Image 1 (spheres, helix red, strand yellow):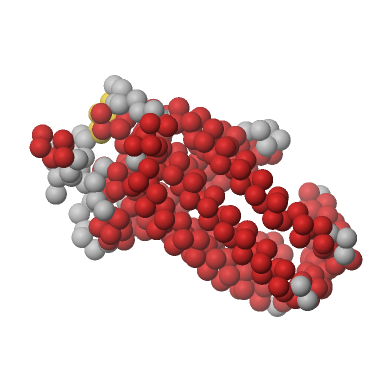
Image 2 (tube, one colour):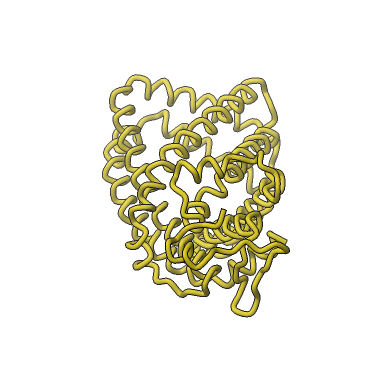
Length: 326
């Protein structure tokens, strides 16, 4: 039922997709300018080297073999890619100072970018919550300004933690994949292992943090209590970890398929809609999941109200104070 309710709430809040698209476009445009200013001078130094040329040629040949489904050629070219990559790493080792400085600045720009994108996700969550709770049509900019303090604090905590988690994921999966590559593992099996591991680890993070945002926005908790509630699956009741995990797996796979299809079938134009819509539908699931688990009544659309068997409502005093009903 959560899966069905999520799509209904998503359709009811589809206009948020366009607002989030415009906001993310502005943030990504500024970020792209900063990335270009940082990366272009470094790329100019290494782009003409024989190591980069060899790796580029090998990747081009691998791509052609992949499109033609020539698995024997892919396996053969993979060895060339490994050799070219090793030579490139040896060259970059001689430029350690420049590489470290560039990577540090890129990481800093990335964190700032994720922080501002996170403000947009928090705002989208607040708008969806208002629509589910009161059928309110909240403006994006007004909601952003109103919730700026809470959104900034949330992202100041979430973004660095997520960044560290991402690094650990790619370091672990990359290290294992590199070991398997050196052991002669077939390339298709290697790609399958890496993609499956990354998807599962990201879904695992989503499952543990799914209640954080709704607990802040609807539950009016502070970040410490929201984090504790989100990570606590020991209370029983309607809060089931495996149910949340399985729903996220299905949602992520559907989202991945839609974005790949939009990229290939529309030459990339479709992701202007599917990419922001991906964030909106995940946020919708978080609020539907939180509402169902806490037996909270909510609007699925203008004609449908979801009422739990044992409804948990707020008193008039709690409503005006912005408090949740424990």
